[in-house]
Length: 164
Image 1 (cartoon, rainbow, N blue to C red):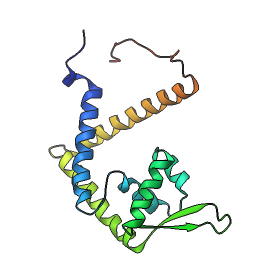
Image 2 (cartoon, helix red, strand yellow; image 1 turned 90 degrees about the vertical axis):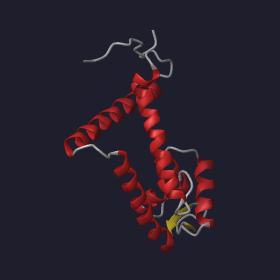
Image 3 (cartoon, helix red, strand yellow; image 1 turned 120 degrees about the horizontal axis):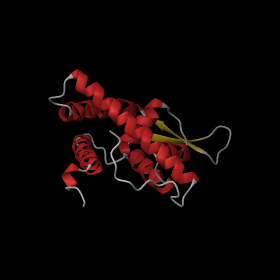
């Protein structure tokens, strides 16, 4: 028998992630950013001058997606593209002065969204929540690694038992 969708952990996690992303997207739109642009901007703020292929890999998106995002960010004046000094076939993406200033707005939007989402949680609950999310990430990353090395799902455990 299938559990009520509202009690399934993954359903709740996906629903919460969607609501969080929507709330953040609305704030970012107020600053002129579209979906996904914030991730590119923050990655460049962390490490400026990355190539589009490295950006795509780090963000887990396909090259055509990153190309379109970079193009839009260029048009908006947030990033600039420069050829490599060692290989002119290779481009590197840099934040402009406007882009660097916009990072503050992105970070503020993230903080406000997180504050709204975590309203009513005390410090201990927040710490426990972060710990659980980290464990979920580790578990899912390990499962993804296994799938990549063994695509036939030979190691898939199909039992619905809880590990309590």
